[in-house]
Length: 132
Image (cartoon, rainbow, N blue to C red; front, side, top):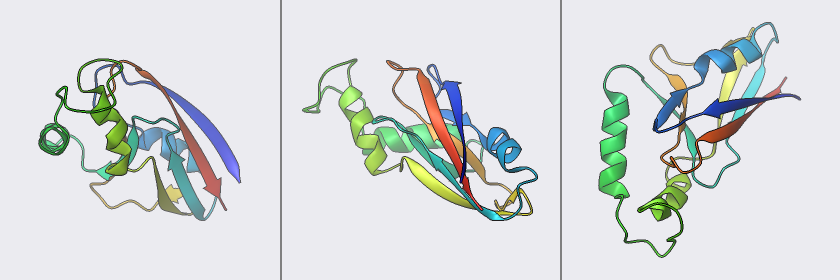
């Protein structure tokens, strides 16, 4: 298994597209399975269409499902930080993408993104692991 660690500065962005980095990692490596894993308690990874209004739709959906208010038992950090710790139950910290001939087998509109609502910790790592 080959592994690479990406380092990201997500800042105050909810969604960070890592498709290009994942594609670069798998290029020329044949067939296999790419596992994308975010080793953080307040972030996840997802496959979504980007650039067509999905990012604000995702933010609004998360706000409806997990509002940023002082309603959580987990209360350290900024207001609503408890919801950040609940997020990975809904946006998984890992996903697997098939790779054929070194290319990600994504649908035409699919992008691999890190979903990170936690602006208190803007520096993230993402583990890309390819099992041939």
